[in-house]
Picture 1 (cartoon, one colour):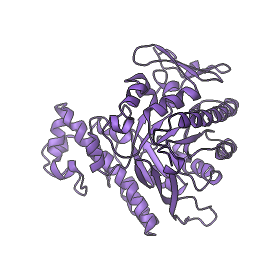
Picture 2: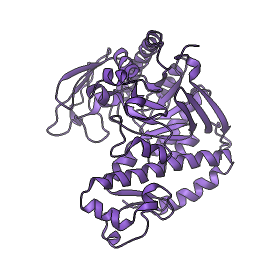
Picture 3: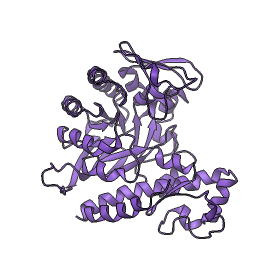
Picture 4: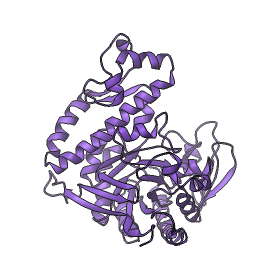
Length: 415
């Protein structure tokens, strides 16, 4: 058996979550993803280390707080330092001193979004549809999509680049993550249904090209550990499009699936369930870009096995802290003379070593250590929340845990 044998990656379901609604198909579950660099016990939250680092936090600290795997961004690492450098270093994990499993996304979201829209609203121009009305003021459209791929300008220096399905696979194979994602076109809720239909067919054809290139590169790089390829399900808020995409990609030779694209949080659980009901039950499902504590429960019940999101670290850098009683901001004046633990019930490194007054001081002094300590806490909170969801599924106490957690958290959420 060669070191890149496909048998090095697999998924097994440990226990199915019995639905609280008997009319629904049971799609929630706890399981285990096996990779060449270790196992991921699911459901699991995968912290985002965009540029091969979770901002301000050592990889060793991410391991200590409970992270099982990290996700990095193919677009950013392609631009800097270059996928070839990561490859020469021995792959993403070795490059960043992380011994566990790693994920990379395809770069599809970033090449279509960076520098041209507001927040998560993508702005693109295709060969058939213009989208000038969603370009931010004083911004230039940096990405142009056609049936072959996407041409874009670097947000770093304005140089022109082009991603195709084949090129995304080449970059991700050089990065060497255990799990990578097929190149897809990420649409928005602002696009018309007509455009969503056209885009879905484009993503289907790109998926076929990704599978083909992945097989070729796996054979050529037989000295490297096997990398699993996940297809990405699009279709916006339309049930027929989501189910069609899931059936189409579910019939392809993918190792797992990502659920991405335009999602309204009010319908997140419904959309994920549509997809999960169509996808093969013996392959893992990753919900892309979802990380608010209250969203994990619906995602898990609807069939998601893993999640990733930058929110935990991003809000930490803005002095926001997660707790079982909701989110609060440590910069508030009431914490200036509070010598209590940052979060009394938390056993993370930050909360067992530092006080609210000290974190309040660091934030107002604009000390970099505040980012480190707050990120450690927030990542610990979400990683261990999803780990607790898994534990309660296994123990048949999931619904009691959900009621208790959300009752406290949503009853006390603060901006």
